[in-house]
Amino acid sequence: MESRGARKDAVATQVIVGGFDQNVTAKELVKYLEDTVGLIRRCRLKTSWTPPDSYPDFEVTRFDTIQIVDEYKKVEPHDFVHFASFEAATSAYELSLHDGLFLNNKPLKVSLGPESSFQKNQRRRTTTPFELPDARLEIGNLITPEEFLVGWRGPSSGVDFFVDPFDSMCRFCFTRKTAFSFKGLSSYAMYRTADDDIEVSVPSDLLDDEDPWIRTTDFTASGAVGRCTTCRVSVPPRHGLKLKKAMDYLREQRVQELSPRRSLRI
Image (cartoon, rainbow, N blue to C red; front, top):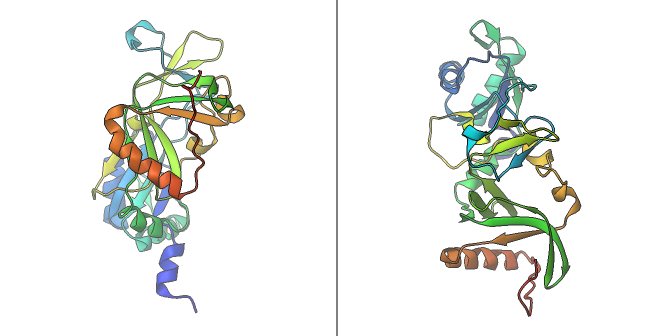
């Protein structure tokens, strides 16, 4: 017989909500769902996505000098909702199956997020990533221990590097406002995930939302992410202690460490 604790680990606390109008805000949605279903920790409402065939151009720093377009296919508005309990998430899902959720006379559609999100978010509260701000990122191939061939170079500022013991992953967060250029055109589209409409009811350090674009898109025009094997990360000297702790963790995970005898040739 399945224990109560095991059931908690198998039920999602994150849901994805759709079916509402473009003009609905995260705050409106939170108020309705909390009145109808239960307490919400975070609500991230998305009405935009990265335009197809567009890539970030980090050389653009002045946005008043470029032509900006907004005529591209938009994603249907949807919302990543983190409920405070798995019971509330399940209730929202079951209500939507029977047309029990209506906002502005429109039925809301709810799908359950990834399984085990309850257990993961409980663990996240006690597991803090090593954060190294203002890093430099280059993607390429290490030809020899002393020679690195660059396929793509990131911006000179606005990149944070995370080494996360929670799920044994490294992440790069581009924090700067960035223009996306279309291949073969001089026009630019403005897009930034941080501009999503976010409402936080209960302050807590939750996992990133399960947004498929984050894991399936090569954001380099040259295809460097798909064809290269090495990331070169440069960290400012002032983060020496944080870097040491991050490197100690990576060594514990048996990540291979190379110490070139000479300066790396780029």
